Length: 314
Ligand code: TXA
Ligand code: MG
Image 1 (cartoon, rainbow, N blue to C red):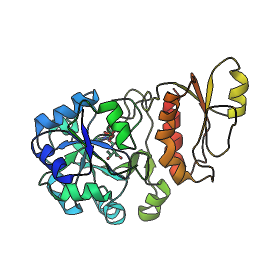
Image 2: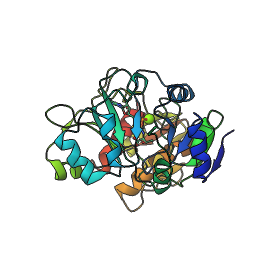
Image 3: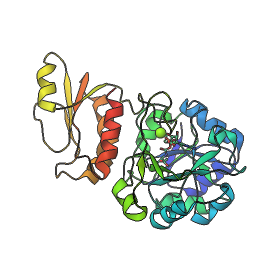
Image 4: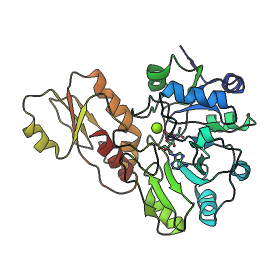
């Protein structure tokens, strides 16, 4: 079983030795390995049961660490870096030979992120290599937003869990591809599209998912909670499913008489995002067979929340 603690020296020692460490980020917890150590990277795929066609994000300590890992930095990417790093933004860029085929799944691009979480920043600055880190959940499952979530699902497969408290943002980073003429959002996430557009102008949204999505991890069956989930109008769904043991995941309204998780009683989308994955997991401990839920307002972080609920509901 992994040890959970706050010791960055121990975390650094494990990573230098080619082991796996779960790391806190402001979005969700990641499962980290030395990006330059092929054996260590392979362990990440194995521990997560992740298919090798799904490329990893490389996490760096400072913006200057990016240059050797890419062939060039397009102007829009530089503007996004200047405005939003460190933060919940991942950039897909043309990669250099320093990023392996294993990390990039053989694509000629790769994903990069500079996270803001202070404990992770302290760890990254102590290492002379970047960290690959997918979300620290078994493939296809909702991402962990606490050390306990990681321990519960992957504790026997990793060496150390660095506990940085509950993830502040609670949904994964927004992914923007900056390789063509116009930047494209490949995954809605913790940085709102409105904020990106305020910085660099209109961006294309290309999160269409299916069996061949442009971010290979964005399969329709992704983010599945362990129980069936229906997304729609809560009162109508209640009427349509009279015989079933129902739990309700609501945005702000309380539903007394049902196992009910309210994402944000005050109607804050930021708070709702930070509670979303813990909320989906909460129903596992409840005596319910069907979770019914509703969309939140489709602005700001609400777009990322609705995207995850949509995927979880199929
Ligand atoms: O917030 C986050 O981004 C978290 C934390 C730990 O940093 N990480 C995360 O990693 O969500 P992961 O592996 O669960 O999701 C990364 C996504 C996948 O959908 C993958 O397909 C996509 O990034 N991706 C990686 N490289 C790509 C590339 N070259 N082109 C398009 N999509 C890429
Ligand atoms: Mg993931």
